[in-house]
Length: 301
Image (cartoon, rainbow, N blue to C red):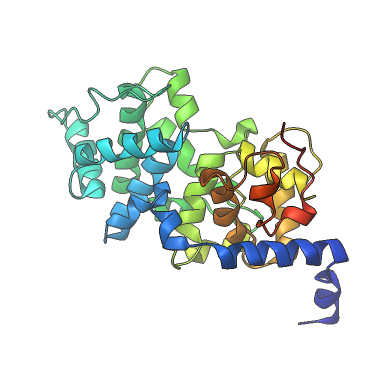
């Protein structure tokens, strides 16, 4: 490491305190227990990386709402994808391209804002990408550029291919809520979670099938809980939970872990999922949290 690199990585006292607290948070985590309550458990059931990436995308896209509802929804949906989801998506696309009858996999599917045509459109786009690129990962790589510090260009390419291959579907709010356009500036929470699963690792938590794309380029999956906590411990001062804020938080974390800034995401997210963080100070709960002394969340009533 050069002198310049060493100087750039020198942390302030505050940064060292945050780093130590976050590392302690990871050390306290029971990964297997938390995976059982996380949507990443669904792609982990499959041995083939092609099936993993397909199930991971669908599971991530449907990961909005209450934790139990998310889990129940994905659990009930998986049988419709077949035993080999990637093969099912590819074969469905080929049949549709030949005007053959295809299974109506999502006929009865309803989850909050998502309706059958919304999920069917994503499924068709997945089949097209598998037909053209052989895998979703290869599609990401086809659009990847070294000048992009993140993976937004690569995801924009994949997004565009899904849209362009499904123009016969009517546009709907449900679809655009389900499958986010990166050019719109939203935080892309569910897409960034999917990319974390696929690019980080492989380790006990993440799949790492696409780790050649670079874990250092990931962006934190930003939801209300992560935003609130990041603001409370000084990772951002921005007032909205948008993509710029997610990038700012990620940049702060990259100071602490340059090659793997999003390694802290799973532990931070599960503070909220597990109920170990209520979004306000509660002494009986907070006193065992490594972040307690750094945290400026308001006192609970």
